[in-house]
Length: 277
Image (cartoon, rainbow, N blue to C red; front, side, top):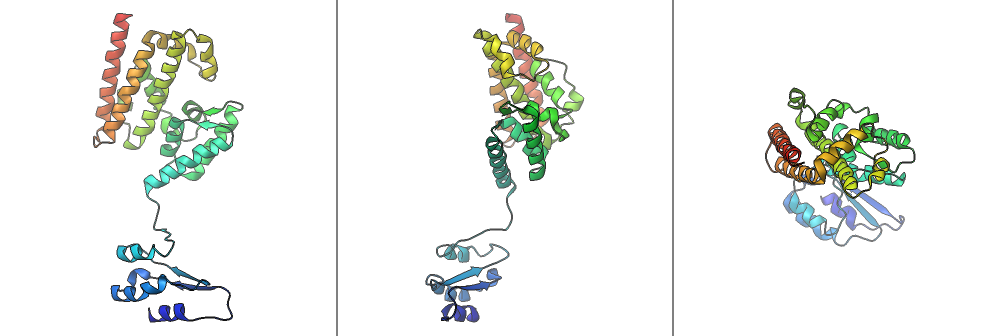
């Protein structure tokens, strides 16, 4: 510390710019720190002082230093911060390429790539080439072309849950915690698609459906079921799914129980629609 104070205090008539690098600042004793602090608030204009340390275990030191300095924390990015940053990046990257990336597709890429930047970039580039002049990179597009196989076996299960087909409960109950939220994205995609189709049918705009979903092979099936279930069913399903996700993020860790509850509610709703049709 004595040497640091001496270097800060010394003047140089031969150097336009001076740099002082001091490492291991977390080891500075409180008494020494109090001696150094007054110098930090009155550094010569041509002096840049760089302090480095291996941790932020001395909060009082950093609280005092940041009043006079720029603090750069390189101790490691938190997983949730990395996810938010990468989510913003992939959305912006798609936008720069003239495309929009759906929320469901983004969540799938984030979850199935384990936040691997290179893998996400690869999948987005493939999707951009695949959709040609289309503007949206949807979850279905990603699912069709992605080499990330997280959804390949689960896609049929989501269709069964949403549209009333047979559900492979053995496969469903093998769903891992890692797969849970991207699986929710698949359900949300189908619910939104059904709501859009049902709304267009109910407002006498059937001709717009093919424009909204030009790549869906089973569109005739979805149109028939959307007409049968009505927009009310899909609105109910989206509300129920939102409640499920809220519960899953509020301390309920048994995600399979939540899914079974969702399925039961949807079956009851579909049965009511069938009886009243």
